[in-house]
Every structure is written in structure tokens, then in C-alpha cells.
Image 1 (cartoon, rainbow over the protein chains, first blue to last red):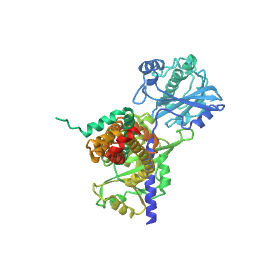
Image 2: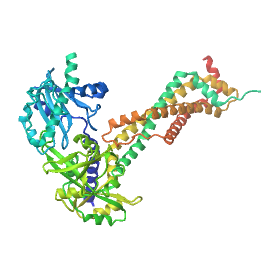
Image 3: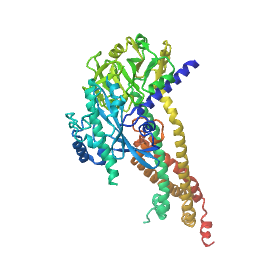
Image 4: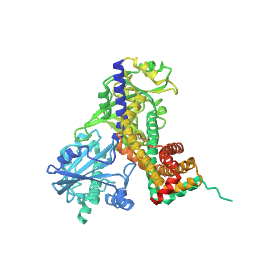
Length: 214
Length: 399
């Protein structure tokens, strides 16, 4: 009898935890899974970071959305790429000195959401590229450090001429030089370049330009 | 012809003589009434919201394979799978019980996805029976698409948050990593605020085949007939070999016990607030009686009986309490949403519906309680006033 009561109580706790856990599964925006660890990995010299939440809808509404779409060269699409998506911006500090930014975006991929994070210096130049999430049979090739390295040193200026609709870059440009290591993942490769350009535009709008003006 | 003086008019006019004091007393009673109404509303609202959440699970009893519940809980929290399987032969044993209305089998499978995060993560899939599960979860609504077109199709329905995370819409593909299996998304659910929001549903037969688990399930949801004795059913289910019974009634008890401590604390605070308001009423009326010592003496010398004086003072108390009570109830209705937000920020788990449920009946109950407290508080000052001796009081004017 005692064993049965023990089991009942255990089972009730199990189900209660299951019920309580439901809201924890919520996935909103695109955040670093483990910010403390990831910030230290992307900016080893950092001593701290500040997180801010922005959205196109709150910051500039429809006019800002049109402006971002024009710069991207593509419309925001589907159920999830909307003006009210919350963007999590990480400002990285060494002591009291701001040394860079980290920002990630969700991008629709062939088999799931792709999360592309960029670590930028204060001028908006890519220091590191990081796939936090990617589902593809050839994901291993795209997650190879050699692929990520191709983005290092690029900035929004390099991506400005990249057209995400036709997936073409100006011949001879740095973006045109980025090689796809996974022939079977061409769709996700193109999605990655669109995500990187969109990420750089958002960082420019929400982080770099306001700092320059200030 | 002399006009008869109404005791209510006199009481009301007396209160108006000290407007600030009266207003402050009414405010004090109002705040107590607000706390009381909100608490009564919370007491009722929380339980009904929790019941609704449990009803939304679609079944009242969940049968899983026996294992350590704590270990299973950890796996569930991490989105993993149950440790053990049950044979489908258990269905017949469950359906033998007259209390059972219908059942729905489920198979949870999880795979390690090396491309999630820095060091990989778990992707979980819930196999469900298209013939029974949607009917049991009739409250689930679709944002896009519908349930599977066939019981063994290679199709998936995604919960709201799972679809958002994977950026999936109807017609998109999903891939089970490391297994090279593709599914086509045929439905995206609207947000239900339950664990279903984070779930990827696929047909159970397809999942059983893909994972070589034919004839096996990880859980069976049991819908119990209305008016049936759930405890009796649970006892019978415990006799089945190697199964574990998770009753939603137990879940409710567990959660209610988790919040009961918070409830006791809040009720204690409310009790203190009511006591303070009560003392405020006694103080206000008593001061008023002392200030009108001579006046009461004159009234009595003019022929008023002790009961008339008692009634007059008591009426003042009742007016104060009625006005304060009405104010508090008005505040409760006006700030119900704010109270809801406040409670949500304080409690570890809150159900999805409205936590504070206030209606006319509850408002009347609160008004009744406040009135009873007022009548009780008014007894002593009224008694003191009724005992005033006319001659003594008139003479005291010159002292």
C-alpha cells in the first residue's frame, strides 16, 4: 500500500512538473542558448554583456520595415518573418568599455529554422559567424569552422550588392567569394547568406547607427 | 403638523458633518473590501482555470510504463522520451473497465540532433492516433491546415511554438536528423498555452515503423465517463502489471497544495486588513459619539429611547460599511486584470485562464461580509451612545 502511495505521489509530481514545464518550452525570437558561455566563446576578452530587446514594429513601424526590406532587397515573408518579431541584441563589454555586438536571426531553411548569429566589432565588421541551429543532411559541412571563417572580416558594405532573391553577388566581390561546402544544401546556403545580410542590416539599424548618431 | 425625523437621515447627516474623517474611513473599508473580493475571486478563479487546463489535456488519466517518475519527469522537462514501453495489448485491459469512455495511444520518440546549439540537443516527436487523439483534444484549433490525411501518412502537425522555432508552414518539410526521414507539415496549431504548443505530432503507426517500435506505446490517455468514479478506476489500473497511473486529479491536488501556502499568507494579510478596517470603523464612530455627547443627551431628554439612539449610531456604521464595501467591489471589478497580473508574477505556476473570477454573486457575498463586520463593529459605539444619561451629558457641557 505504501509503495502504491509513493508511486501515486511520484506520478502526480511528474505530471505537475509536466504541466508546469509547458510555458518553459516557449521559443520567442532568436536568443543565445547559453549567453554566458557563448559570449565568452565569441568575445574571449569580454567581461560582461548587456541584453536589449527591440522590434521593427516598436522602433519605427511600417516605414522602418519598408526601409529594411529595401536594403535587404527582399520582402519579409511567411508567418514568422514579421515586424513584431523581438530581436535580442547583445552589447559586449570589457570593463566599462563597449567592444562589440552579438545578434542572431531566424531564417526559414529547407528542413527547419536556421539560427544565424554574428559577432561584430564596433564598426560592424564580422568577427565570428555561428549557426546556433540548422537542420540539413549536410549540416556538418555548413557548420565546419572553415565555412564560418569565410564571413570573418565582412561588413554590411560587402553585402549591399548581394541580391537574396536571385542569390547573386557582384562578381569579384567578397560575398561572391563565399563558397558553399555542401552541394546538397544549396537552399540552406542561400538562406544563410540572406540571414547574414538581414542580420547586418538589423545590427546597423538598432546598434551601430544609433551609437554613431549619439 | 410636525414632520417625523428619519433615523437614516439623521445618521447620514451626522456622517457628513466630518467629511474628511468619513471619507478616510470609507476608503479604509473600501480597500479591505477590494482585498476580500479579489481573494474570493482568486480562490474561485484559480481552481476553475486549473480545471480548464486539465480538461484541455483531453484525458483525465494518463497511463505510462512503470519507471522512476522523477527520472521520467526530468526527461519530459528536457523534451526527451519515456524510458520504457507498454505493449498495445494493454488497451484491452484498460477498455474492460466500465468507467473508461475512450482511450488514445501515444508514442514519444526522441533523437539526438548534433546541429542544435553548441553541443547538440534533443528533438522529440509524439506519435498519435489520428482516429482518437483529435477527437479527445477537440479544443485544439489550427492556424493553418488540418490533421493528417491518412493514419500511416508521412505527415506532421506542429504546435504553435514548435512551428515558430522551426519556421514551418503547411507544405514545408521537416527532417528527423540522423535518421534521414522526411515529413511534410500538413497543419500548424494555434497557440493553446499547453504543452501541445511545443510538440511535433506525427501518425503513431508511421513513428512506430520508423523507430522499429511496432506494437509499442509510451503512454495511453484515458478519458473517463462523466459521473464515473476516477479513484475506483485508478485503483483498478494500478493492478495492471508494469504500468504507472498519472491522474490529473492528483496533478490538481499537487498544484493546489503548491499554491495553498501562498493562499494562506494572502488570506492572513486580508484578515489583518479587515481587522484594521474594523478598528477604524469603531474608532470613527466612537469619536463621533464622544463629540456628540451633549447632543445625544438632549435627544434623549426630548424623548428618544436608548434603542432609538443605538439604532441611529448603528445606522451610521452600516452606511459607512455599505459605501466602503461598494467602493471596494467597484475597485475589484476595475482592477481585476491588474490583480491577475500581480498574482501571476507572485506564484510559481499559474493556469492559463483568468485567475480572478468576480461576478455579481461574489460581489454580494463580499458586501454581506463587510456589512456583517460593520454591524459587529458598530455594537460597542452604539451601546456607549445608548447608555448616555441625559442630565449628566447636558451638565458636562459647563465642566
